[in-house]
Image (cartoon, rainbow, N blue to C red):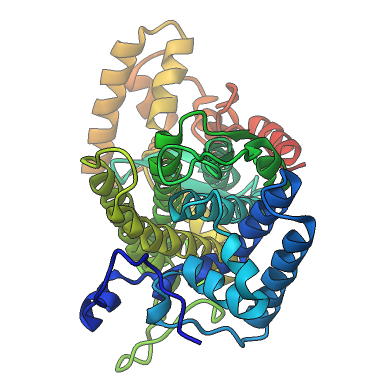
Length: 460
């Protein structure tokens, strides 16, 4: 029996082997096989449901498709370059199993709406998986936050010491970022969950299909109202890559902080053996490979977003072969985000240990409480800008004398301004500095505990 041909008798010759290889996508779109089989099963049911094929033929198609699924899961389905893509590979194998009835599966369907359907089914699943991983990541951050409400850490702006913070407050900032990521993916899901099946190659079909029926079978919430748009739309993929890029930005920012915190200059955290590696020649080294890799892989996902934008910017309607290039970018971005989320979750859970004593010492050894001196004077009736300038002079004087604000005597304080009283020492104590910032969303311990309660509710 001759091998089924991809193309019609319009073609007399065969593709040059190098062009066949260049043209084929089977090397990467095998990733879609489960979704192709699921979509094909829905299409076969619809063909029988509408009377386009007989019920018996529909049953034969379904049985053949499920046999291919079993073969694939058992590792017995290995289509090669001659199949060109996963869609033709499945159809060819189905014809081998079911005979000529297998050739009826493609009735009222094009590979254009077929691949669009498969890709959306794939991405729906991956969005749910990534959302689950984000929840796991948030839970680890929340657990750490609960443990470190009373732990202080220097807060920075411009990477210069600014004001002390509750470490929990710092960690919860990343919880909030992850929450936006989770919600953003939910929005992307809505525009991914629209069925292009039945749009045909570009203009619909003459067959009496039931698009709502296949959409319901596949769990789509809506169907495309324009066949041209249905087969050529990749907005959902671009939106996903944008959301994925933001996830990577957030992971990379945390990764950068962990790298800094683990340095000898900071020593805010210790790296455990679970997530650190050594040097090939320097036996004393512990390297933060996990956060460094996450930081590095971030650019990879950005690149896929840029590639997709460039891919789509000049495409006329409707389908163009250029769109074959969407899959590798999408697949790799999904895998990269999932791997980085898993790695960062493990890192934060068991790869680092915070050093509260070192953190406390760092908080106590700077001028991060200078703003509180200005605030103190403002509560005594001194205009804030005047207080601000005065405290700047105080800091300058302390630096020249190698002192901290806490080292000034009461006499020195009152020489600076008569409004200072003995309670200034309590006001500039780091714990009081943190506790006093009790505005909604602030780092005050009471606010942080309320934020933890809100976070728990969000996870539920």
